[in-house]
Image (cartoon, rainbow, N blue to C red; front, side, top):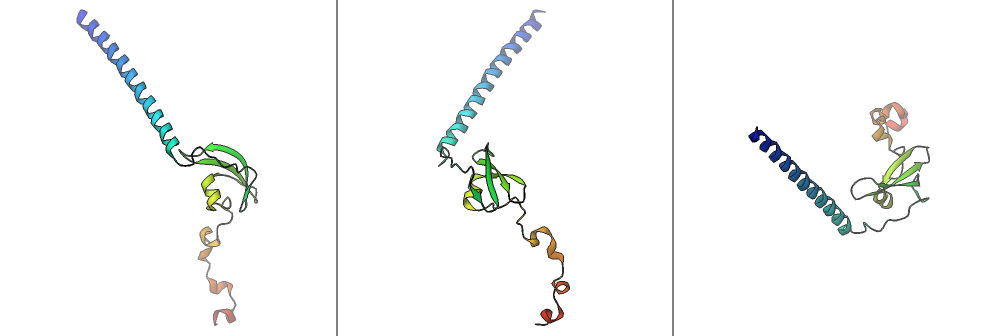
Length: 125
């Protein structure tokens, strides 16, 4: 009996040590992530885009971080759809609409034969 009691006490001590070490690792990870955020250029400077218009999108709400380093905004498109967009995509012009501006080529209309649309005079030019 004493042998099994010693094992259970030992297991309890190991478990307590493990939990403490795991907590230390989690704290180090959080500290490292915070340090990375501080080291990223312009991470503390956040542009106020509220109310500004980019293409067909109007910024209506700050949604905080979208991913680890990107500030996000909720934008409303002229067509009525809403979309979450990164600040950098708005400022660089990479996102101008909710997707409603995609060309017919990207929507699958490119499969239509142009000879079917054009008149015989235009085809024979």
